[in-house]
Amino acid sequence: MSEETKKEATQEIPEEEAKTPKDEKKAKKKSKTTEKLEQLEKALEEEKDKRLRLAAEYENYRKRTSAEKLGIYNDATAKAVEQLLPVADSLTMAQQSMKDAPEEFKKGFELVSAQLATSLEKLKVEPFCEVGDDFDPNLHNAVAKIECEDFEENKISAVFQKGYKLGDKIIRHAMVQVANCD
Image 1 (cartoon, rainbow, N blue to C red):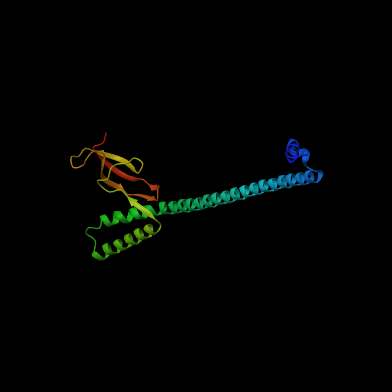
Image 2 (cartoon, rainbow, N blue to C red; image 1 turned 90 degrees about the horizontal axis):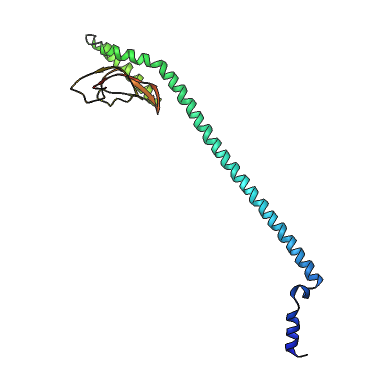
């Protein structure tokens, strides 16, 4: 046979027929190994995914409990401050009515009022509402209205009782008189 016919003869035989039984065993072994490797890689990816989800759940839990703790603290602070506000109002009214009182009394009331204001500030409680502010029904309780040329429409013309808030939480609405409202 010539070399060309040998080449043609070997080319005509399909590759699978040309393989020996040893080659077939090696191929099967490789495919089983490849399958197992793919299964292990898939299992590893699933475990990684589970771990990531667990870590995300824990982080969400930590954030949620932290927010709940802060909310509980703010609610407790608001409740306690709410009980002290009548004292603050009494001090304010006493200071306003002490025009003829001796200077020592005035100074004493001013010091006590300043201490109370400092304590509220440390608790992050802020008083709000001044004459001339815009009326906001979410913050103010309008108990009277007046027609007055000195004020624009829906402006606070008198504050009967200051409002207090802790962050965004309203502890007590301000009691006000509103000018030129409908």
